[in-house]
Image 1 (spheres, rainbow, N blue to C red):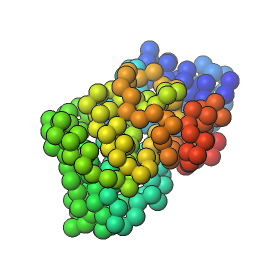
Image 2 (image 1 turned 120 degrees about the vertical axis):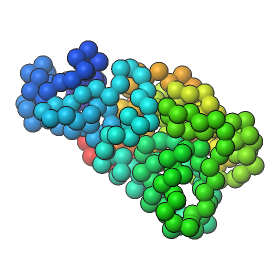
Image 3 (image 1 turned 45 degrees about the vertical axis):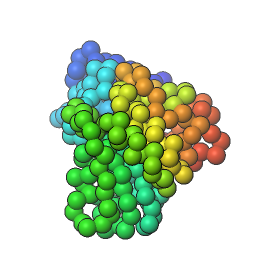
Length: 254
């Protein structure tokens, strides 16, 4: 059994038991304690579970956890992904940054850069208040308190009037044909911003290609993604869903 197959089964066990010790994982899969520990570290550092003493605890039950729950997971992997995303930011740009716990990590890195940022994320905007620049436009509308983004038809109209250098986006699930979110409103914002950008940068961990979260709304087709920043290298069967010109950047080695 590969680690990826084992990780999927560990998450299935978590849905039933809600909490597992490292020793339970080792015994269940007949692997060494060190192997089980590496599985625990991978799941917790990529935000798929919460680290507890001696093991891990589930973060969701086959659904998308709210932003605050996801934000409690201190993930060094998300920070590494954010640092890679920063490479695509340059002074003088006008960029869109969507609502995502990884992209929230990107925003403080942009304080002091002379550029313009448009966002529908409350947390992104708050993270960009420390310095006079960049300039920040927070789209107006109704606040989704669970996922902490803002939506309105007026926001869509504003986006249609802006040309972005880069649209930085996230998603809760990646299917064969595109990037999906649990909210139609968020999906529309992402779709509109991406259609107005020179390039689209997607930040998404590898597990989002295989999870079963309830995310029915597609925002951007995979063939329109210019850059994918992920945690570990993708197998060829996942890579081929993207445009051959898509730059795929894993931040970790297998």
